[in-house]
Amino acid sequence: MRSRRTTLAVPGSNPRFIEKAQGLPADEIFLDLEDAVAPSAKEGARKTVVAALNDGDWTGRTRVVRINDLETHWAYRDVIEVVEGAGANLDAIMLPKASDASHVRWLDRLLTQIERAMGFEEGRIGIEAQIEDAKGMVNIDEIAASSPRLEALVFGPGDLMASINMRTLVVGEQPPGYTEGDAYHYILMRILMAARANDLQAIDGPYFNVRDVDAFTRVAKRSAALGFDGKWVLHPAQIDAGNTVFSPSQEDYDHAELILDAYEHYVTVEGRGAATLGDEMIDEASRKMALVVAAKGRAAGMARTKRFDAPAT
Image 1: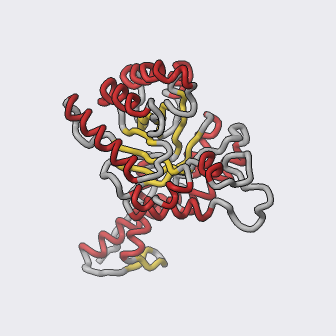
Image 2 (image 1 turned 180 degrees about the horizontal axis):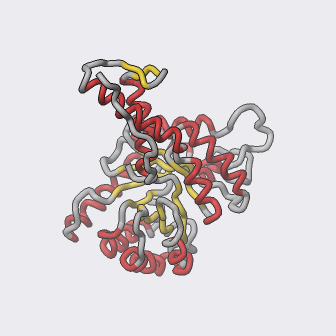
Image 3 (image 1 turned 120 degrees about the horizontal axis):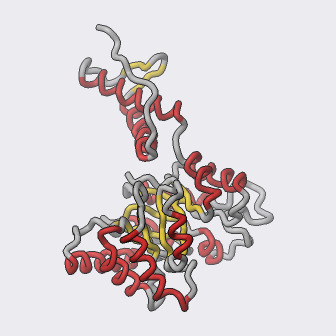
């Protein structure tokens, strides 16, 4: 599992922003060739992105490039130039406006052709699919199952809100007049179910009021509580908050690791299917729940502060 607690968007046409991003603690950096780049700058941005991937220091970060969507004439050249030029230093391609499984399969095939032609390891470069419109939501199960390269489903709230005529101009906030519950709950759960059914990560979209960290934190806690793995960040001020929200607490991480150790001991050494950890009953369901928390903590680089001591027999 790659850690994607925070996925920082960086304009692919801005060398200064790209250089600064290399020193920021986001888990993933995606260099954007789509919305953040003006049409007149898109071809030049490809060269900037290739140079940055090859020459930059991205240690410890997942390196992603967002291409233009398939309805544009830029998309295929984005893939060819970036992967041929820097495929060895690229972890994944983000595919915007993935409204049909055929979009993901197209990208998968093109990546395979380039990898074979260039002598790269076949299948190593992953895909992140952005769900950004009503059609993508309706087709999400087929999209999620469309390619073994697929690593994550990403919520694109701005375009999706526009596609369903949601009455709001603040991306990520509740629409005015919607006072009962959460207007995004169905969307988030639909993305989460499709992701989990196909062993994918689920990433929440950005919050556009970038300097209101308290509001960002409030919105991030919503998707983290549901089980999302991370969230887009648009500004360095959002990174620490996002990393904290999408990491388990130290207490929860230690507890999860203790459950795993205890269960392993009781099953393999004592041949029991259920046991206790302190006053807590643990069984196979406990192990599965603990694996989720432990995996998130390990991906975030957390260190244990407690150890399991097997009881004397």
